[in-house]
Length: 170
Image 1: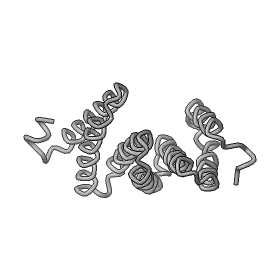
Image 2: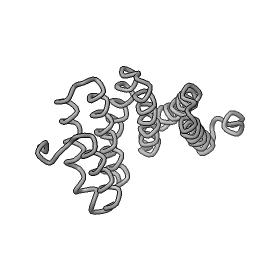
Image 3: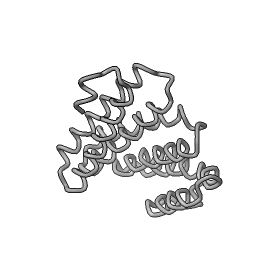
Image 4: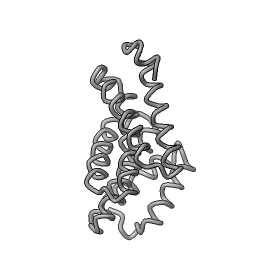
């Protein structure tokens, strides 16, 4: 963003610019423009990494970086770029673990991160690892359901659609 470039010290402008890049990436991906979508996500990720480096104790920056990395993993997975998807998904999971107790939205992010790592394992034909990851995600659903019942149910359904079953629970 122009404002973010003009005054790089303005953290709020830098974050807003990264949100705009992330939304642009979503729109481009929806249009099937995967290469420019990836470039927009990479810009958002770079900006968020910079914010995390500048303010490492500011949990919100790490959470937003995890979101962008998750989107990057999804885009790479959809394009068959399994190594890139795995790297982004794993980093998003690590960041999500750091904030899991912060809020119900952080917990939702952690569930999504576990689901995504499982999706990458499934794409690699690592069925046992996929089930393990999906079960880790499922184990957190009851806690999420207390605060956010509808998103918890949607996530439960998405896990079942992927092949996870209650029999696979830890």
